[in-house]
Amino acid sequence: MNYAYIRCLPSDRDMAAQKETLSTHPVDEWVKEEEYQINDALDALLERIGAGDVIYVQSLVTLAHSPAHLMVVLEQVSEKKAVIRFHREEIDSDQPLSLNLEQMVRMFTEFQSETVSLATKTGIDRAREKGVSTGRPRKKDKNVREALRMYRSNLYTLAEIREKTNISKTTLYRYLALEKDGDE
Image (cartoon, rainbow, N blue to C red):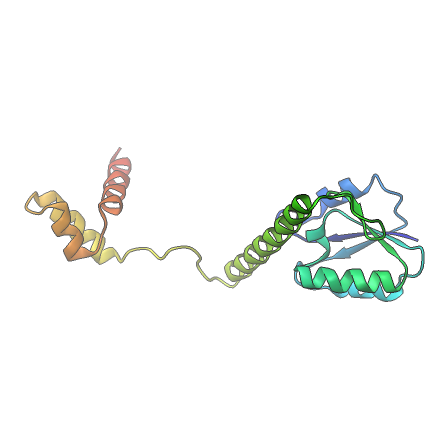
């Protein structure tokens, strides 16, 4: 049996890109993972596959969260004498790789980098859903107002303003520009 395994990714929430990519393969059943960090559909698929079955995935990062997770999945598939075909990397789990060491290291470095990036994006998305603000915290309005007052008085140098308010020259000029844009 031929399966296509697709997973909700921050860059492909509706999995449309994966569906389009894998639709060129002979797929009998689509297996969808609705959440990036949950493997229920993958675990169920790995339980029911058998000898000769093929699982098509768009890429390494679609299948696993880390190199260790990838190794576990590959071992389970191998034990059941099934095959995974990775579309983007153009590799099959049952075929020897015709890559030199540099190409292999580059491929796994990209995989690890993508898994870290996806985990970070997923964490940020979840935090935003809970109402947590992300990014660098804003300066206190009191300090900004004081810095603007000092600047307009022409009695203080930028270094003195910075020292007394802890507002950098760049931040001060940004707030001045925002005020100017608001006046127009």
